[in-house]
Image (cartoon, rainbow, N blue to C red; front, side, top):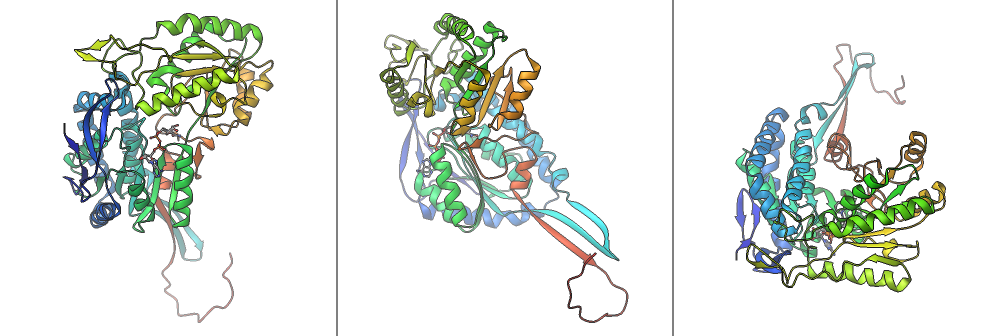
Length: 504
Ligand code: NAD
């Protein structure tokens, strides 16, 4: 048993509270570590240290800054197995999926290597006689990231990479449920040559978050998590005059047209609905087949495929997915499944009764783990809580539609608008769908359309608050402010005061 401390000025720091919270192994239910919890004074201390370190980092040539990030990427790869194992054991996702978590974060670090290009600004000459105008991008100062449990490497790196490459100091408040990998990533940044104090990690719950939101030195907050907290953070940042981008929950639909390849679509749905136990903001949790025949064929294929899925210990190489993150998360999923049954949906495959009591992995009992088997509902309607709420578990709901128009109305009218997909062989139908769908990230025969690092990632409606997306060029806009300079070097005599607005 050990304690995961805050990380400040290039060193572990215990903080002043002495308060900790257990970090569990979701595969066994056992406590494996504790995490320190910060109070307001602790957070203020961390921010003050970051503020001291930031000017020197900002004054560095951006090309030199990105050389640190280049070395950071090398060190992350060199430590990949250790990072993925720790991530897997604290989150519960499989080892291979944990590697994907780290690597999709590294993608954004690679994009951030283009910081000198992203920051170089614009220049217009002779905007008036002898007058030039130029715009430059400057770092904001100290910025914060507040991140969720479900991608404990990827999302911190999505925030840290562009923020640091832009010359900011960064304070990360990761999820308290799987806090160790974020600290390891900060340590590796310092090992790569990053100055102490530029990347700090502070752990905690609401008090620590509120302290970041209220600290006037923090100039921007990048948040990812559930919608109620995203909304709260956006409002509190606005009230405090801070820039904020806050990404929230999701309910991602897949529309299946009659011409789709049913076997391939069912495979895509199984992976996208049940992978990582459904704990992905881009998980496909609703399928909307068009027409009875499509729905019946899809139902039959899913009933055939779902029992083959193997649920097990996160490090079991045979497991398709592991446990949910906590007992509360599992109990919530089971409660929602019960509500679906009560509301009249047809529970075709019930994952609640998964029995891990006699099972072991490498001598460890899985009986206390937070497992939920894959569940599949048919005949779900839009008024049921299993449809309106984000379940965030291994549950796939089928909503039957008569027409494409009706099918599209489901994702369009849902409060969330993170991801959506269409499965079809009809290019015209897919094109119309892409144009008209009211959702931020769209897949065409791609079940989880997470954009690549040089495009941007962001949901619409209740899935995202703020106008700039994560990663891609938007991240540099978010973490910098534009200064526009109009400059003149007159060599003529003073023409005296001018009392009218200069016009071109
Ligand atoms: P969460 O909202 O519970 O926690 C996110 C962060 O907010 C954590 O750091 C947590 O400590 C902090 N927090 C929690 N309660 C708080 C409170 N009352 N006041 C202040 N801060 C608080 O989310 P989670 O359970 O860690 O993550 C799962 C959620 O994140 C899901 O809803 C998922 O869809 C969403 N998510 C969204 C995206 C996206 O890009 N849209 C990506 C990943 C996850």
